[in-house]
Length: 589
Image (cartoon, rainbow, N blue to C red):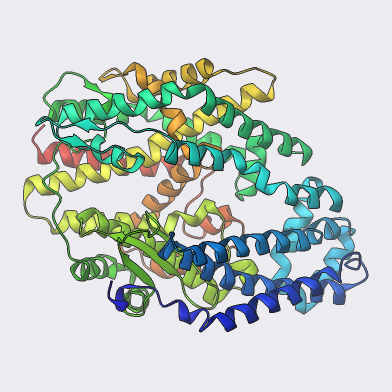
């Protein structure tokens, strides 16, 4: 790979010596932070100095962690990179343990005294953190318990780690065959590709092969999943939450009302999903379709090759509606080694964006000249611009926004790109294919993820009231949800009941609903941008610049998105409905 297509990690640390110096500085700051243990109630000076040292430590830690992770992900077979990454993981645990006393100790201070602390001008930049402590007092445990839970954090994540290792490295994936008898390799990643293959036999064989593995190992996976759910329920009870859902939504700066409004509105509009499935069946020339037909774009033409340099220009043109400042920062990202572009041996798979405070974000791609990769670029740069604006305008504590808003900026960019490509396309079939692709994206993100969210809610609720669940129970819950969500035009193949066991996000309890709320928010925002509402882009960038200095629901209200209100979801479904009509009109159906 040419150096212009690789990260320049020397921007973080010029040499090994600089890295070692930073690690030593971080240890010094950790020692300083520990000195304030037991002293935070003494007065505002001690509290301010503790938070100031914490802020410095977080800035330094972010650089050290980013450097180690990015270096490791460039070449995961390099033992020196792995050793450094593991060393920094241990450092992260030490740091977490060292600062774990701060919130419990602050929570013991009388509210009136904390308000006096906040009257000191120096404490202004830590106000959101302290107000959160006041709000969360009943959920913060004693110092001893907080420290214990910090030490057990690795154990709590072990179920997810075990699941990942088991399903990614220990599954014996048999090959499948295409219609010409050619053997096709099967992996977790390739499964999604085969589900979109135009050849029905490939889809069917991939579907049956994949789920035969989950059927074989369903009891082991059930034990891993239910153990994860139980640890979340126990920790939620320890922290005095009403339920694990209450704990999860509270930690997201959200609430149960948002979760329940989402599910209510999705269920109310399931007829649109059923209508889309009927259209898909018609395009496939069938009365009914199987579950393995759901993901194929029936109008898809051969995936066109797009060179990276051309992809850059497409993204810049598509996002020009965001204004000059935004586009100029995208150019800077492309031209200044913010992006590690191409797929190569031993490089981390997938794509992500990682912000580094007061420096810039780093984007990992595995670009293979696919037209779908263009959307990935727009998506990851949405994350990057969110991180850039928040880092530029907030301290490191307030710059970190929650997952509740994390997928919004990325999805806004995807929708803006999709609309640009649809409007520019003159070939009717290609235009229809692009609209169909956008409908599929909304269906998979808004509706399917809501189905996952409904599954999680039911599983957690049953365990919380003392039900003993088995693999059969989980399969049955999931199968009934699939029947409800996909409707009568879809043949609900028996093996789909094992699909829940394929969803790694279930190990991050109540994570998936944020994909649904995220795309709902993004649709509303993107529509307002495309309609060129006066001052709206500026309002949106202001929201991105706020980072996590306000709670997530308040941030979204800044851009006219209220996730507690039914009308917000109705706007998203209206957009889905309009695109469905556009597709039918285009195809004269």
